[in-house]
Length: 516
Image (cartoon, rainbow, N blue to C red):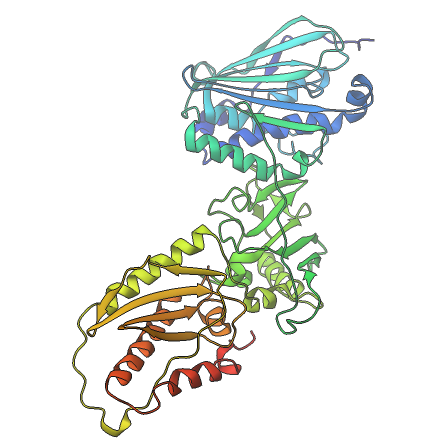
């Protein structure tokens, strides 16, 4: 049954003519601009789920299809939501006219118009409201509207079946290049991150340039507490709830990545289920929400592992919905209380991030270690100045016995280098089974092999990868090894003693970083 439909022949753009001229100069980014169109589709779907479910056999499904034609300079966004109803037509196309219900994503009444005007000089909106037997089309020609200072735009009406529903926006004569390649990839990544909550709903499907958007939830660290390594492992994720002095509540969850990932770490701040700040983390971009008061500076351990989602719907948001509007020093208060909540027992996430160590493996880490070994090799093959005769200060240094088989080894092939007249091979191994030997110096015939264990507690504490600098520790190890070789050749007594004693000492507290 169709609804009683009123004839609408035109829509008013006053007082927005001047605003339309300003929109192309706004500081949008492509994914946020396209996100404004997605917001309208989601809001129409949310507000009319009962009607859509009735029409859809009990399930209110939403399909949003974003097509990009670079050769034709055309972008279209089509949905099968409820469409724009007669009573909303006038408001929907008037800039800065908010909807009667401002509790959803379409809050300010400006997003679609501003984003479309930023992206294109010409755009057409075609809509059919569920239950209404008309199709309406409104064409915006921004240069003409501005030049003629038009107050009204014609609405073209054609018949439609009452069961039809949805809206299509077509942008042409683009102000911005139609996205392709890397930019298109970033749009997909950002939209997947921004609309993660909606994508998780199996009723919602968003397609960008032929590819359905998906979102993968993070894998959390499962490990014993750093201070009790023999205790049963636990998942490092917890719910977070913060009440500001103003009474505003911020709730969500926080956790630690199973593997450090600086690009993906950070918080996502969600406003009415849409990520408004921090989407860059999941999109592997640099604008994740990682305030230094919580994450520390530089490549800290917190900045590699800490991740979370926080609902900030009680905080005001900018009209572009890409950042928050905090009152006075409210963000400082939020960050202080967030840090306290994150480190509260029984799961102190920040302390665990700073103190937990596990040997990262894989091709990327192997490549990093190989590069560091090459740098150290280049240093040790340089001539070393002759030292004064150490006389009685020379101690005996010796090699330790052979170790058990290693799990991994980074070794520059079988290449040997001439150092101090000796044939030398440097090897970095990853052998968790051998915690008693940080360094080994082994002689075979007239060649020497210097081996450093990356899984040793000392290396894990002070040269952990990724995130810390292995090179200084490796340089020190090679220097100690060269000192032993020099002592061996000089006829020092008990040449095995020093490194054996060094390894013994480094099984104790000296090998461990102080708990933060």
